[in-house]
Amino acid sequence: MSQEYTTPVPDLDASEVPEPGAVTIVVPTFNESANIRELLHQITESVPARLPCEVVFVDDSTDDTPEVIKEAAQDCPFPVAVIHRDEPVGGLGGAVVEGLKAATSDWIVVMDGDCQHPPSLVPELVATGERANAGLVVASRYIKGGSRAGLAGSYRIAVSRGATWLTKMLFPRRLHGISDPMSGFFAIRRQAVTADVLKPLGYKILLELAVRSRPRQVAEVPFVFQDRFAGESKSTAQEGLRFLRHLAGLRTATPAARMVGFGLIGASGFVPNLLALWILTGLGMHYLPAEIVANQFGVAWNFLLIEQLLFRDRRLHRRWWDRAGRFALLANADLVLRIPLIALFVREFGMGALTATSVALVTTFVLRFAATEALVYLP
Ligand code: GDD
Ligand code: MN
Image (cartoon, rainbow, N blue to C red; front, side):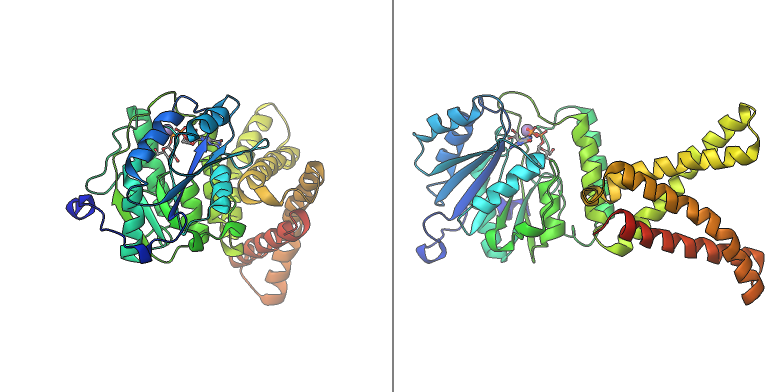
């Protein structure tokens, strides 16, 4: 299979090549001044002879990267643009989306600015997309012929493997046919990009595109993840947390999925609740007031998780203390409402206590979810 991909790219005849640029290469950069010349050199060597190209850097640097780009661009046989963002939003992914919007070619290739992604593969990615009539072509480390040689350290390899596994579990359908959803190297048809539905957050822009833009057909080409040419990875532990928030946001895009998330977070609230109860009664508090106080710990825990994972972009409509107050009110109303509801089910509908309690739990849960959506986090 690798043989098929490593053969030279079929000649693109003139009718297939849209003018003026057949491919826009989008490169996000954050303090990469030491890598720019080498990257543009590698692109010059391997792309323009096979495919007309332009390069768009989307830069969030605090160093002299933009100046270095402008300087180096003078020696390039293709157009080079720099978009510098003074107020970067969305991190790496946000930068890439800016680049996607600015691109003018039918095909866009996204690649890193540190030479870990070999530019010699750019024509291959586009040619494969044309051949397979695909909307998205992923350069993958995980198919035959690819490898993650440049992924330094067993820790990063383990994290990468775990993240890939988790992500594939969460999106079995959307990521069907994508062995490397974490890859930052891919080609996408400009037509397939639905920029207005994207909510990029951090590094995993390919995942964002695969899940929200849903390109009709996906192909893959193996690649060897190279060593960084200069400098160090810009990824941090904070980026890991951002990734989890990104996953949560992607997974809870529909009300049904949000309700499941709401339930899971609610269930996790038992842990701080019981812990607080244990400590308070241990300190000698009577168990009844302790129940009430401990419940607030569960409520606070749920509130924090729900804010971070479920309604991250719906927080702006109210101030945080307003949201917290409403949330706490609903959570406690839930408890108070449950008892008369159980009594009603037992007396009026002749249910057994266990059935009545189950039905009441489900009813108040759904009500609380709906109320939280409508009264705390306006759509
Ligand atoms: N504009 C912009 N803004 N660019 C950024 C930002 C940002 O906030 N953060 C990082 N970049 C740029 C870097 O300058 C580099 O050109 C590219 O994005 C990749 O960043 P690295 O810090 O080198 O990432 P990495 O090597 O750890 O991770 C790469 O490989 C992973 C696979 O293991 C990325 O391609 C990941 O997306 C990929 O998952
Ligand atoms: Mn890198």
